[in-house]
Image (cartoon, rainbow, N blue to C red; front, top):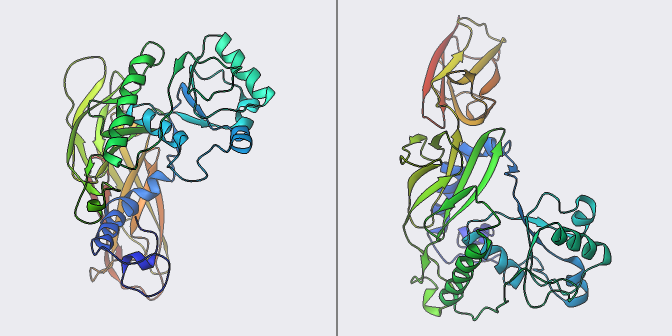
Length: 381
């Protein structure tokens, strides 16, 4: 956790205290390897893949039955969401107003944890959903008017995280078995400890994988309250699409596929506390084109155009790009940094100041999926 300055350095101020010297270098690594290079890309890839499963977080039950997460993750509702993640399902969260506004036509499964109280309008929508063949998964506390197709009995945490995690994973395996006839996973992991989540941009998939393999360590683990020590994991990840090329956006390389079947499968290795982000596109990156003018003058605006291409032209995806601009003395110049190539294209305007150095300026682009690089120079007499 990085809850503030007080947790990063020794300090007498603030409610959070510095207790682990590994916190600061871990945050530094996260910023260097993930936030800075991938941040611009992720800002343009915000849409989750469509899903056929939803979870209702009932406002009426929160008000009249004291249910709800209250912003924390120690409730049964939050544990049900965790169960669905362990089952490699990516549900959409619904609220009373979204059910009334949008209905439930786009879903096949509705999960209803701690839905003791329902408004009349929401209850009618759920009944209509079930009448047309929708599957209701609910616990024993569901409003009597709703009869679940699959009963998911609630449980309270015991305070032993290893036992609670094992119990939730067991529930996930059982629920997965019960839902298999009704819902098709888009992605899967053969290791329950590696959890998947998808976003998309057009036909491009962005697969997030999180290594949740943990045990008790020697930091606070001896209290038996938190499994804070990460462990390595390996998994076979699969995606239900017939064709595609997989790129590791953290390691900036193409990933080898496992042959066989009508889906994309590949092996992944994760260190303690690690995750991964994979881009899946129909065709491989074949070229990185960098266009800059050969000559420019001080006080000019230099147009830099970069295209990430496949066999058909600019790649229909958002890709991370690193742009390094150096002056004639090799010093980094303004406008260097991380960018996103939207639909495979990026245009940057380099403003040369009147007091910038004359000579050869170097522009270097590095594409963050395949690792391809391109370099060009601009002569500023």
